[in-house]
Amino acid sequence: MEEDKSLEEKTSGPIGRLQSWAIGLKLSMIGDDISQREDDTTLEQSIYNMLIHEEGLRSWVSTLAQHWIHLGSFKSTDRPKDTNEPEDQQSLQKYQRQVTDCKNNQFQGPEGNVDIELIDKSLNRYSVHFPTAGWYLWPATGLGFGVREAVTVTIAFESWGQHLDLALQQDKRRMVAGPLFDITAEPVGAIAKIHLPHFISLPEGEVDISWFQVAHFKDEGMVLEQPTRVEPFYAVLENPSFSLMGILLWIASGTGLSVPITSTTLIYYHPHPEDTKFHVYLIPSDCTLTKAIDEEEDRFHGMRLQTSPPVEPLNFGSCYSVSGCTHLEIVPKELKLSYRSPGEIQPFSKVYAGQMKEPIQLKITDKSLGSLVWETLVKPVDLQLGATSAPPTFSGAAFVKEHHRQLQARMGDLDGVLDDLEDREVLTKNEKELVEQAQTRRRRNETLLRMVESKGDQALELLYGSLSERDPYLVSYLRQPSYSS
Image (cartoon, rainbow, N blue to C red):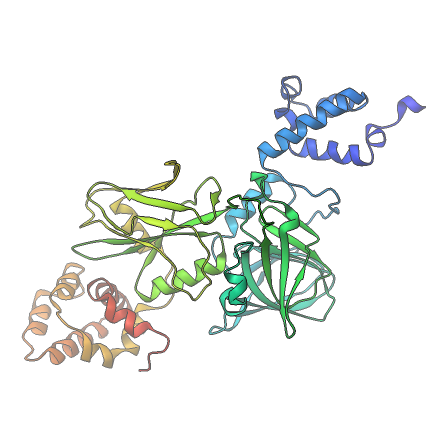
């Protein structure tokens, strides 16, 4: 009988899709009458009862739209079903949290994690083989691939500044909206779709998705392509052709708005016995920028501290003030949220905190509005824990062995290093005095190195740690890739 038709049949088509979205977005937030429902079946029936009345439909859709914008959830009207992609808001928020670090070199695939091989460090080029059809996501970058069959993909991180014409870089109507990748796939046609990450904040409701464009850099120049659809944190391109590619935002003339973006705050700790220093960066959420800053800070022995990003979207091009406890010296006290390509010098604030015996508080506020957008508390114990728990990028013992000759010639005042090694029971008091009695600096250095090397790798690691703290510039100099021993 007609009355016995299922609810699914009665709400098929556009209304059915609205219904599905509504349930997925927990429409208990829409009204008091629905918010009290705890059973999904009852909620579904309540929505249906509203839908069968035209006035109820209008009211419901209107309310849905308002709460839809409020919730910051965006869905395209013709989105194809794909159970392997992140579809709900919780998954998207998790997805956003995952794309903040480029050190996790694995794709998540339908049959588990797939390792990524670094094939050319100088070019930041990686290779990965997807063994079966399915959906593959690289959380560290935000890149995702829908694969039809087994395929090998190469991915390189590139710089917009090296490929985008200077005139376009200075064009205020067009802005970089995400990382630039050089992608190839073999065999051609094996990839059905790609997710390209972007940092534009769609939930603000101020950005027209028609402004998004995929830029391809080819032999004939830059070619623009409209993405199939745009989601929070990524744009989708179906049946893609691969090239040097990334997301640009074309801002219509006369809009007069500040583009809201997701951003990242990075803090690096630089130890010093007399004046502890921090570097604070405010950048768009672009993994290639974070990677470039990590590498630059690592050259000068900066250690990144764990911190959360600003909760709310920030306005691209706006100025933000950096402040903290009264005893802190901060230079400069203002940062502009802008995009500079990887490889360019990224702006940051230096924060001098003295001997860091007490916790310090750091804040970032919107300069024009005076509103707080980010804050953190750094305690002395955070620096100790960070130094011991951070995974080493290389062996300190191997470093000392490799650069024995350079350290012998270049190490300077050893008083602090000798104190450290005696305190950590690497050297006895008699051994310390034996080093100090050597007639020349070079002999003192050689005596110390041979003495510590005879005690094993653990002792060498402690020596490297002391040198890194006492003479970070020497260590940074010797760690430069271009340095030849």
